[in-house]
Length: 455
Image (cartoon, rainbow, N blue to C red; front, side, top):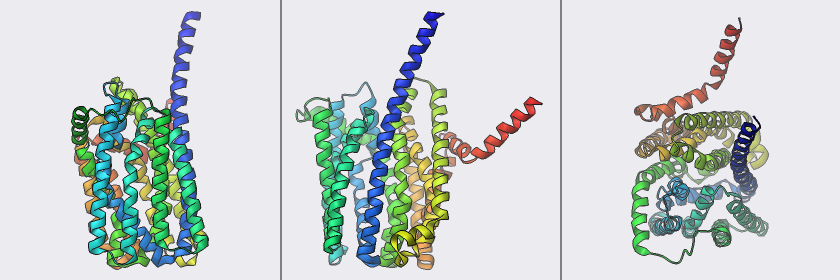
């Protein structure tokens, strides 16, 4: 009896150590994102008031355009790299070298394309801002360090690097506001943040990583691995292009079809709405290694049970955020940004509900990677992009910023939920999401069943 109790206690202790590690890892990621959210929120208020609706619109348009061109550096590798680092069969040094090669090449291509685009279409200050922001992409290949530490369940290290970088860059921006600087200065401060973040990631990697000499490159092996990663990530990469289109095309189309002031109003609402998107990414990224291990161990019941619990949590968290922010949207906008941005209140009240589908989509994206059904990432994201472009085309001329918000909401719902009905392979996740959405009804049925059983 005593022996059995000892074995059970050892098992419980090992489970607790594992779960506490995941919890601590998630806590660091969430804390860092809250810290970043708070600073970015404060800086956005100061910048919006300082620059005014028109200039803030130009700045936001440029940031959105850079995000669209940055897709060349994502190469669809974020989740795949974490999975490769976790996998015991992979040489982590080779994975790191191949991943960095692909991402740095992609970001360099993005910079070249963006500079060409700004030269052909930009005008005056707008063109200069685009070129400056493009330079920041050169440092983003170092984000691979973050993926490495995610796989190690050691988010504390890159999180600290991010907080230091954002703190310094924020102080530089506040100093610029004090001096009365224009949007070129603030574009340069965005690049400064990415440069500092790259340096921080480099220091953390050199100091704490244990993968060998990264400069000892066996080009034959690395290029072969890069080709393999590129093949695995090709579909995710295409899906990432579609995802960025339906996440950022609204501001670009508003600029082209209405003007920079409409972008300024809309972007204020989008900043407040999208600021919450880090939460599902932090939670799912931290638990992703656990889901991979459950799937590889063959524990399908435990695997899907964990997914359902996590999906329930993400839905209800998003629902509460949307209910709170949507109900106070006018008050929030006017209180923080001033009456000049009052029209953004209605935009925020609509846009914030897209977070329900964004939160659930974060888990769906990782499930797609684990199950190796990457083609569905392309299909669902492609449908979202198509719906967003078409709806924006018809709604923006008539309803302007509000029309763009509704287009975003519908396209997110299509990409992250309804499109899963199209295939038998993804319908399982559709029903998991549906059970999360109808959680209150499920609870009512459970309570009612218990009452009937008691009688």
